[in-house]
Length: 146
Image (cartoon, rainbow, N blue to C red):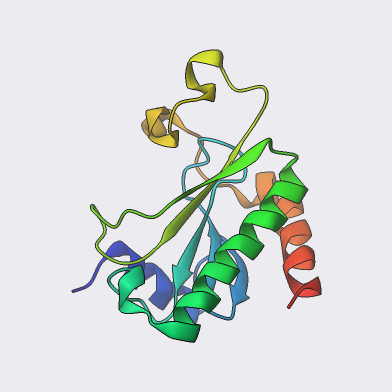
């Protein structure tokens, strides 16, 4: 099966995805195409698998460690209150993790809601100019712990 996750990983391997933050041992850290909250990122495994349960032992542990490492960097570099982690695979049946920074200044009606309560269709598209500084800080933090 080919999903958007498979296609995106192929683009990353080819060096054709400008949202790339860093190559991690288990996959790719990328910015979300819609920045409904500043700094929204994803972790995509490489190779792509159907779900977390398709990984065993050390490979699974590495993916989860990379997820936590990316979350630590995101928390430190965005000043977020917390990071929400989401792994569904319902619409795109391939493993991927959404990492969503949550901020103190979010609207009260959304502050405690799940990230999918936001209207993603009106969210700003990813723009390199807006997030280049954050990308560089995340890369630096991820590389220092590699």
